[in-house]
Length: 182
Image (cartoon, rainbow, N blue to C red; front, side, top):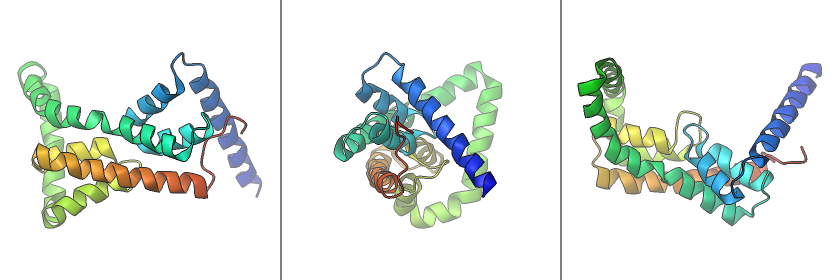
């Protein structure tokens, strides 16, 4: 019980520090939520609880801002990654080798499962709000598994919409919204 109380105190202190840090940024609250949702790994999992708790937005506004912010990087990744990879091949060979090795390794390990479930796999991968899943990872997965951009984009959008609902429900049901009061 003592260790649980320490963990709870630590989490409360972190939450208050996060709240203080976010509130000092000189941007409108809506813009901060959108920017937070654009950050890899944080994405909707961080943006929606912050919108609900720190900024006291309503459910609908928190959801919309989180989803919009999370979707902004998707077309950029889908359309900019291939030219970026070609650039690294010409100017940063070490990075090109690293990225292509990672790409081939991922494709080798997961292509059988992905090919079997293709569309459902991509939507699920984006929709399940875990630390290594989301719009960023889903966009990269679409590239790795050669999903055409025009096919990948609506699948990723659907996954983000589902993830937003899941995060919103969990935030509210479990009281995970980050509050300014602690």
